[in-house]
Amino acid sequence: MLKNGGNKGEGLENTNKKREGNTKKISAKKYFNQLFNKKFDTEKSQEGEQSYYTLNQIDNKTLQEVIDNFENNLNILQKEGKVNDLVHINDDTREEIIKNIKKERDLNKEQEEKLRETFKRKRLKTNEDNKIERELKQKQEEQLKNQEAPVVRLTKQLYYIYKEANKKFFNNALPSCIITVQSKGRKNVYGWITTWKAWQVEDEYLYEINISSEHIINRSIEDIVTTLIHEMVHLYNLINGIKDVSAHKYHNKKFKHIAEKTCLSVDRDDNDEQAGFSFTKLDSRGKIWLNELDIDEDAFNIGRVDIPVNSKRKYKSRMYKWQCKCTIVRCSTQLNACCNTCNTKFEYIEEESTQ
Image (cartoon, rainbow, N blue to C red; front, side):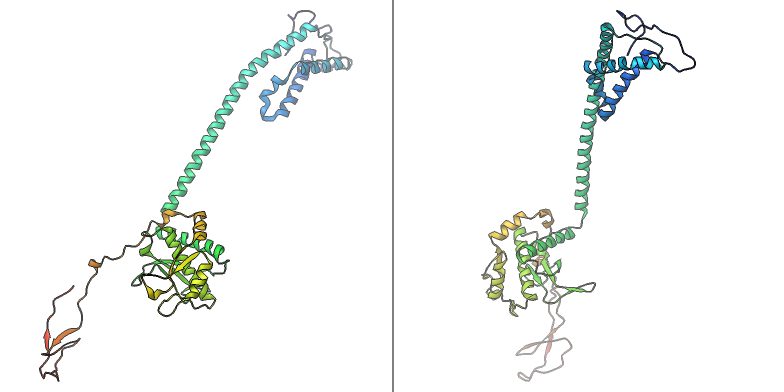
């Protein structure tokens, strides 16, 4: 900060260079620099990570505080024998100090800009790294999601819809159940519910709701949800002792009454009059609720292909055909008999294979 000699005016003049005994002494110049550095370090510690701004904040007022502190304490220090130089600070010396500070300030400004640019690049790099990390994580989650078995993925969605519908339309009155996706078999239905608790999970017995696997990919999500809630209405009636269907699966007015209290509109099935009020679809409440759900639509792009009619295998009958003059009979063993009507013996007739 201060330089010896060569200063204009009086500068810092060393007027006493005697050492008194073995007392450790420092020069006035060194002491001034210590005071200045102490002030600088105080500013630095207050700024923390932003310490590179500190030198710019050391203005003339700060400098004057350091000089005043130096001049006030100089006499005391000289009496204690801690300094061996008598120093006078005049205007020229002050100007030189300011000049040196400005020089360091300019150098520090350049350093400050470099640091700013470095921090800016670091922030950009950090933001970019975070973005890449988020995209990678999202991609990994998507891959794990796609690796999930399609039927498991679909079943999870059905359980999710069951839970939300139970909360929204049944006041959580329905018990836990097992939801399956199985073939309709010989039943020409979209789904069903067992009338007994078909599953045992540890010590608990649960009903089963099934969604026919042949009627998923060729139907809309709204229609599939309608089928699920339709079966949930049957479950509600089942646990509350309400007989809503007859032995021939006729859906009576009790079913219609409970279903319309949820989110279904109910009508007679024109294609099957014996089914009664079995035709259901979501009403306006149900459609609004469905649109608010977070459904994985891709999970419903799955379905079991039914066996084509012309590819169904026909098996040869195990019954053999026997004929007399008036009639034809079948039996599984050799027939050695006569007809009482025409009094002729039954003869075996060989049939063409239908396999």
